[in-house]
Figure 1 (cartoon, rainbow, N blue to C red):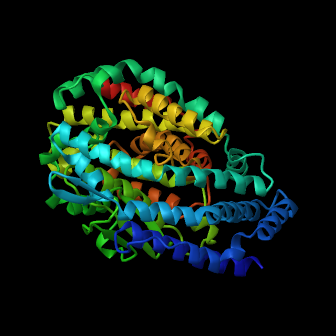
Figure 2 (figure 1 turned 120 degrees about the horizontal axis):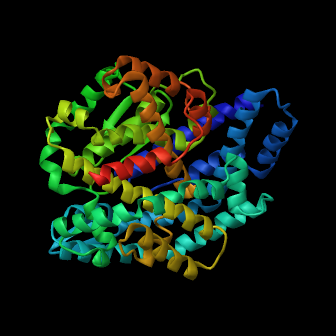
Amino acid sequence: MLEQYRRNYTEFNAAVLREHYLFGSGQKATLELARIYERFSDLFAPDRIEKLKQQLDETPAHFESERVSLRHLLSFAVEQFLEDAVNTLTEEISAHEAAATIEFAGRVMTFSEAIVALATAPDRATRQAIDHQRLAVIDAANDLRAERLRKLHEAAWSLGYESYTKLLEELRQLDYEKVWRVAAPLLGSTEALYVARLSETLQRDIGVRVEEARRSDYLHLIRLTRYDASFPASRLLDVYRQTMAGLGINVDAQRNIEIDSAIRPRKKPRAYCIPIVVPDEIKLMIRPAGGQADYKALLHEAGHAQHYGWTAAGLRPEFKYTGDYALTEAYAFLFHNLLADRAWLTEFLGFASSHEFIQSFMLVGLMRARRTIAKLGYEARLHAGEDFARAADDYAESLSEATKFKTSKTEYLSDTDEGLYVANYVRAWAFASQLRDYLQSRFGHRWWASPRAGNFLKEIWETGDRYTADEMAAQIGIGPIAFDLLIDEFNQALKG
């Protein structure tokens, strides 16, 4: 029974991920998931979920691999049951955003193009005008998002779980409250330096005080456009190719990893990796807009792509598609944080006088880390209740306080990821810092130029999603995942 289930599971994942790729890359005008879910509905029907639970309960503890396998399959079945309950709404929301246009100064833009324009526009008044229209598009679909969230909660209850959050905790063996408690000290420990450096940067780059900063300023500031000349678009793919070569990876020979950098009007502005068939067909999608943001996006997604591209072909499919996403996010953070490495910047970009850039880059990293931790607290509270008016206030207050950028209530649902995914980012920030420290200790500060380091990474990538981030940290010998090192890195970078 399980072998046929695995074959169908593999086919389903490839079909859904290909659909997301075609829509997200702008090659399809609509996202069509319902027909795929209908075709494979047996994979996540309630009776199938009960059978998987029963098999897991009946498998003895000493059959560890079999239990892990069943837990992965159960997680998949439950998550897709939830998604199936809302996929019509998912399609409707996606269609709304895909069809939306924003007009400014005589230019008509798609929703995706407007987000890029907002982030790259040098004039603050222009950014605010575009953001006003962007928020209007989001607001128009918030009733659909609220209905979608209620249906997700109802679907969790229908399976016998106390709540949506309890369902996630049981499936992923993760205590979200504990993750928050471990991560939250970063906010207080970095507050003083963060506010001081943010104040200086806002005055210098935008000409506003901290008290005046808005979310549209955040979206512009994180691109660090004042340093774009040091990150030429013409060098982007060469730098990626040379970086991987230092680790003994020949990207030109990797026929299984395709970089989609084409500009299409409806292509999503957010870079991402889609592992359609692991390890044989990996899509690394970016929408180049220039500067360090492109380098960071490409390197981040390369971390995902290399992880999935080196996953052992012989692994069970559930260890290729379903697991602890904090693990692959940590590999992504490991690579995008190369932009904070002075030796790497000098060698690959001739950017020797990079002290100011690195401090700015680390400030942006801290902006993101603080925002992510605040979102984890907010999203946990969001899923604990159904008072969406209060949730919107909570979102605006929590994110504004953590980042110091005034944040609108409007994005309180659109700015949340499925299944408390934000917890994966939070844990990945810390694990990536520990992994980088390990690589530097074992292979030298220039670990990215060591084929031995590349071999080590290939070895852990080969295991795909078999292990959780915590298990991988323990196997390497750097666990448990902790935030002390990350806090120290931020504070040291911002002191200089």
